[in-house]
Image (cartoon, rainbow, N blue to C red):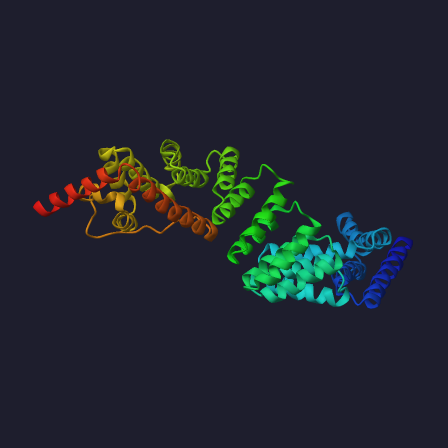
Length: 401
């Protein structure tokens, strides 16, 4: 009987303490604890009123629910005031784990009414808004995170990327500059800032951003490759070459960098090196047709017509429409055009699906520059008369046929 009296007294005291905590803090997260306590007390009364002897397992559960659990909670709260917040986070994470973002958001908004300065709550709410497509609301939450913790560099980055999605480029650039002032080694922020500056055609500023980042991460493939593209757009092909070489050295499978090196080699009339790099770049499916086309051009300049025809046909097989258009525009192909098998139904594969916009722009710029310098160099030198003679012969053959 004494045991029962002690149990009832302790369980009611703990219940009242937890209940008063809930009222004082206006925190409904205590409700599940109170419900468990109430259930334990109820079971105890039911067993007592039935005059049955309580089984040891039932007694253990009742003590655990009505005395041990609330006592442990009170003790933990005394030593760690964030224990209930961890409990709240566990509830929210549970809803998010099962994909119930609506319920998770309801709980987050409820908890934020009680504690609007909580970093973790704002962070999770921002993530949910982002997943739901509420970009502006997500930005507001991440800004709150930065206000609470100004060293939350990931939230700076998040805000910048979301501003970019909203096409608010100037604000995104400001945010990224602010982030890099605080954490200059944040490579992902550098990449996005560089992209935005390239879109704005601020190539010199982009080059400076990449060079600053390379001080902290000199063996980054992305940084070296991106700086190479910026130098390409600035027509600084010497520095572009150095960057592409470094990128290819870091990543031997960097076929795009090797393609750029091949184009630069053509600009400087180094046909052998260009041929070597184009041959290596053939392993990249998206640019293999372009590589065969360029290899065909090189072999025309070297006088290897049979090999030039072979490469041209391979290029056409890979992307008939695109390569046929390039062959039509390229004067070098006049001497072998009738030997190239161009189908009537031209098909064009999706152009460079894995390439970014800046890669496409840099690649096109390199190719245009190469076309100008190659044709000027080839047609303008001592081979001009031979070239014109070959064209004349081909035209005569075409008329006879």
